[in-house]
Image 1 (cartoon, chains in turn blue, red):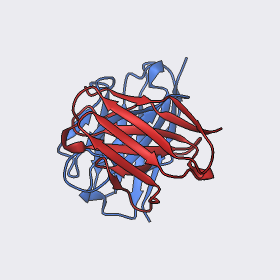
Image 2: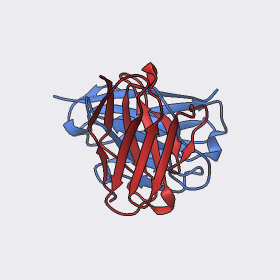
Image 3: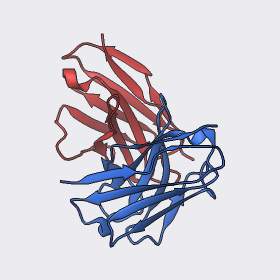
Image 4: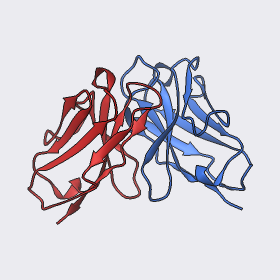
Length: 122
Length: 108
């Protein structure tokens, strides 16, 4: 059974940093591109970042480019999102998601974690 | 950036009725790289359809997707009580990946 479990969500002040982790199990983690998406309270879904299966290719939404860094550890089957210079508008539930199928570095997402809440407020 | 516009914003229907949801793109979605998701309150999204018309694993055949280019449709042939939720389309033909604003299917 595929499982994605996020951790690291917290309440932080504007300008601070936070690192999210996503522990993956039940599939060959190193064979699939992975992504982070988010959903602000009461709002729709927003793509944040994607990373290729090997980790050599990374992609970011303009809203987080230069502040967030996606990475992965294929030995530990874990996906990360390092978030720096956090802003109030980054407040959201952050989901990690597995790419449906193999090949390209991003695609549709067939499995999602339960989400980690990040609140940025003074 | 490909902007996706979903309509209607809310669809009020009764169980057993047919639901037709629209997703229009601001430019052609390459290779029909379009997906549909269902999301219920407090839950993560669930993939229904990928590549515009392919059902994801375990999705009932009352869900179907169609379309190409800039116009896509999700059809639920007969609404079951568990189908009342918010539905999102997503394009993944080019970065940045984008989602539509969602259509809420509510019980009439």
